[in-house]
Image (cartoon, rainbow, N blue to C red; front, side, top):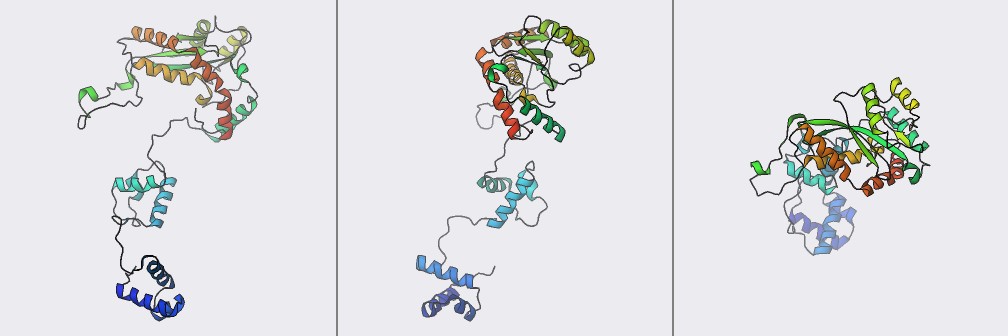
Length: 331
């Protein structure tokens, strides 16, 4: 856009003072009426037509360019700042921090993405229908449900850790978070909980088939399951095999039916596993037997009130899934 000289601005002001007609002044000086209006309003406000002192460097992007960048970032949320403008001739050369600053002004911050199971339309439909069917369950009714699940407990975990260190010491040995391939030694565990804090944990063989799962249940629910309880397990192959179903029928175990697949957010024991893994990783067990003793010790250290809080969250979990129409929830 051509720059208007100060001489031309003075001519605009003189003509406006004589005629006070923006349209006629613009026609006489061969200018846009909007330009005449801006010059006149600036003169009325500042009593000058000279350039005012600017607050800093001029913006690289116009308002429209800023809006387009934000729209592009919303369409491709997993693209990095430089990837958004890569190969585009619409944007000037900008460094990563400049692009990030523009995006932050619009409330788009870089964050760690939540990890959730992939859900198909069928998964979401079943989750929604299941949550609606059990939405009339009260907290007291949920307290009688025995939630169970398997989990691989490793000596080392890959969760993000923070360290307080001096500048330039990032790679010093004492400030580095040590990792081991595949988490080092690990043990497959089966656990179950009840609303009053009753819990059990069983060490599983590395490969859990239908027969091995029945052996685990023999140990796990023998002293824990009561007649008024409802047993919950997910749709793993060893859980829904004919042999396992026949075993549960023989034992007269009431099973929570139609548990929707890909729904760890509905199972409160998942939160207990996360707490257990974090606590176990701090103990640095040296071998499998020591790791198992640490797992059992930390499992029983979890306060009963923590388990009760997880049970009390069940109505909110179902409501959250219903609100998202079967999609992911915050749990």
